[in-house]
Image (cartoon, rainbow, N blue to C red; front, side, top):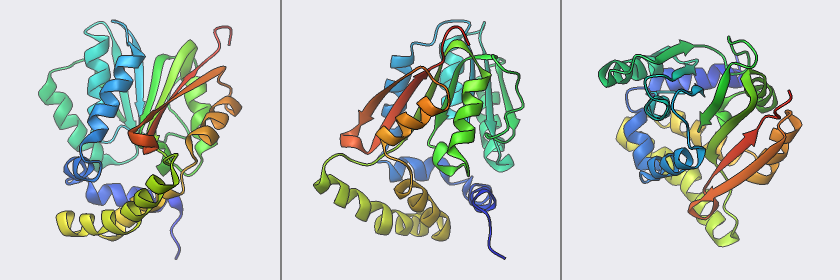
Length: 237
């Protein structure tokens, strides 16, 4: 029986969870950490803010949000992989932050009331959901008026010469790294498929607008290998 995208992605992350953090660092040459740090700087999360981190995985961005929001803030992390959340919960417990709650759930059907959060983030997770549009609509729904949705994702490099190298890396080298270092080939083949098939940064900006966001700004990283989208919900919604 052919698996749906949702089933396949779920199986991937339920399988690679123990190696996910180390492989992420190797695959991105550790750049994902500096990208997220710069995104957090631009977000300028105030003390006491409420935030939701979608597809939170092992909760690295969730923890950064909690640190920024401080003891008066409230942060929730949501992921559909119970095994990824186990790793995340271990980190949360070790951190001592009591303001974080991790929730197992579906990014396309968020179990939260409308107008609940000041910020909603999704890092390298949107490419894995079956319906991008529905996820963006849900992000818009749960944001408070004036709130900001932030998506950090892989993107397509602007220069053709860089794009060729990028394509070769994700198509041939990354899955083999996964097999050599994590003993998994098929799972990392999925990651390269989801990366190469994901909309480019301008197409994604249009999708945010279609989901109801008022303004969308885009910041590129590493010659376009990744991009951050900052989408603002209108104040009077």
